[in-house]
Amino acid sequence: MSKRTLISPHGGTLVNRIASPDKAKQLKSEAKGLPKITLSAKQACDLEMIAIGAFSPLAGFVGKADFERVCKEMHLAGGAAWPIPVTLAVDDAVKATLKEGGKAALAHHDGTLMAVININEIYPHDKKLEIPNVFRTEDEAHPGAKAVMDEGDWLVGGPIDVITVTPEKEPGEQFTEHRLPPAKTRQSFTDRGWRTIAAFQTRNPIHRAHEYLTKCATEICDGLLIHPLVGETKPGDIPADVRMNCYQTIIKHYYVADRTMLSVMPAAMRYAGPREAVLHALVRQNYGVSHFIVGRDHAGVGNYYGTYDAQLIFDEFDDGEILIEPLKFEHAAYSKKAQGMVSSKTFPKIEGDQIFLSGTKVRDLLKEGQRPPQEFSRPEVADILIKWAQSV
Image 1 (cartoon, rainbow, N blue to C red):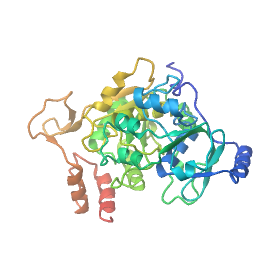
Image 2: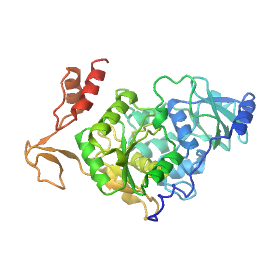
Image 3: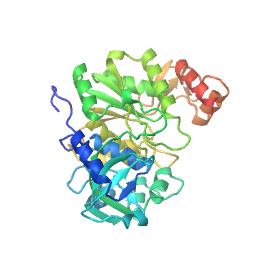
Image 4: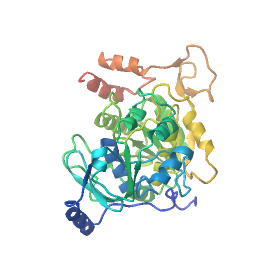
């Protein structure tokens, strides 16, 4: 990467599948006579990620050759690294209305017409290939694996032309101000004079260990992108609007404004651990990010993955396949003896010295109206979470 330019998008070109106003008008008219596919929440998120170029080089939902090679080898059929197939699954009833070489209208579950797909292929959904390879388990208790199990038995592959990524009746906050597509984050980085940017992926409020990681990363880069995921998550996760309030508050009080940027990523979580860490890295490369924080159990759930499997997987790719640099951090916690944040790389382990709190313990404290220890969470963030925890 040149010192004077931002990192290149994955595959070299930033995809844009958003139709021009004239094209969108034509698509709306055409869609009236097409069979309709109603998108799941995950599929609607994927459509937006494809449309805005966050999933570059994908121009649509994958065909059979891409699906099979991604599952088996973490590469697209053309050779580019890609860890998780981005698919459009349909059931038998919908499949019966479609034909290869034809088109279909893609609609949000609220009825909003979102796109038209050119159907290159319709092929069987090989879940026995996808699930164990992508998720490393076939346990129905795994939320990502279960989601694929519940999908239709046919996959529709082909490029999409997108009319809108904004559903008309979507409940809740859309975070329009912070919902910047890759082209706009890249422009913002350029306007700020940043050439090296570290991104922090999160679906939780930022606690002291997260703060430590992000600030270590900021020390070696021009700026920091706090980039929370606000697409579909699993039940029990803290709502996105609550998390956004937490991010804005901690940035205001504990980060340098000129070196910190907040934007949201409208992707769906798959909880695929190591493979999803690679996907998150490639997506951030498309957003213009040069360095990506990969911490303990990135994108994991339960005990399905090893603590640092999401870091080790990057070693399976050849040099040059993934341009973004993973920043591989050890688990960090507050040390009473050191009086600061430490990891196993920076301070010797002493019995009872470090402050660890389980998620269950934190939630119990919040529900009781108690702040977790200040060594674990900033009080301003804790107060937001107490208000939320006592309202649910």
